[in-house]
Structures are given as C-alpha cells and as structure tokens.
Length: 134
Image (cartoon, rainbow, N blue to C red):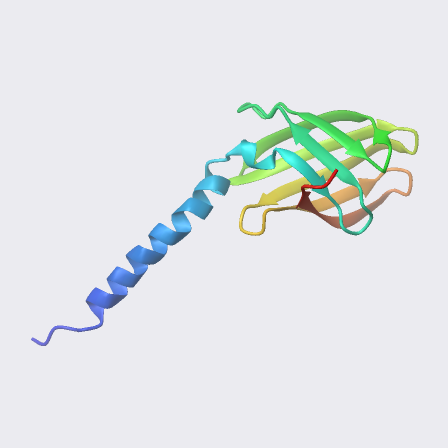
C-alpha cells in the first residue's frame, strides 16, 4: 500500500495553525476581562468610554464623556458564549437609561455592538476603538 505524502505536511500545518490561533482564542475564550481596561472612543462622534478597576467577577468602574461627563448608572463585564461582553447603562440629562451592549473583538482590539438611545427609542450599531489620547 502506497503512503500519502500529503498527510504529514497537512498535520504539521494544522498543528502550527493551532499554536498560532491559541493565544487569540485564549484571550477571548477564557475571558481576560483586563483586555477591556483603558479608554475607548467612538470614531463616529468622539464619545469616550473609560473602563478601569476591572475585577474577575465582572465588576468595574466606567466613565462616559460626550465631551462632558455623563453619569454611568451601571456597568458590568462578563463572559458569555466564550466572548467578553460589556453592558453600560447611562442615566443623566438626555440619557434616561440609554444602553450600550458591546462585545470585545480581540483580533481587532475593538468593542462592537449596539447603543440604545433612550430619548429617541432607537438602536444603533456602534464600535469603539482603543484611544491613547487625552
């Protein structure tokens, strides 16, 4: 019986691919909530979301700016279906319960999801990128 010369290179290639992908899937899959820490900006309007003091249980401190501070009533991070998710509720003048529901994309280092604008009762697809500015 003739042995295939394809099997060994294919298996080797798959193993290498697994080792390359493992670090990416580990961050999102195990839920390293620390990946959320920092300042994030919505490029479509300059809104800034600052996340800090993130704990393993999902508790965190969040601040939101447009450009002045807007009160954050609740914020929580968690692992849901092997993805890091973030929930932020705003309660302030012109923000009577507006909600962000976001997922962390480890590959692009972005937060993507929806924003429910409570005054208009509309939901928008949004994205935040990491921001290192002041």
